[in-house]
Image (cartoon, helix red, strand yellow):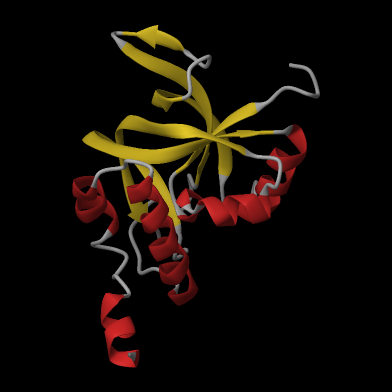
Length: 169
């Protein structure tokens, strides 16, 4: 792989928030959505999102194209290798054409996924992470990730901020 090669990144936690991604990785290019079958989204004991293998479940994400410089920056934000490790995993891709190949009728791409392989049990979210995840959920819904997915996997861990907004009005 050349030093100028782009990486496709599967952002499933607070990196569903496009503004956060532009701050962290200013050269990124948003491409679309993707699904990873047989994995499940959780908040782990560190208080942040993680994914774990889980037959019959799924994880949805936004896919970004990253430059090598942006990938290096994201490694720092994600705490590689102490918090997360980098894995390349094939995902079903629903984005701009010109990426991936068809397999079983679906477009597939090999995507960079950050996975915490040490902390795989569930825990409560960090308070600051709830705010960031609520912004991420807004972008996920706007880009076509279903409300059903959000309600089934993310909302049990991430309370909405509607109640706090209505009290402050």
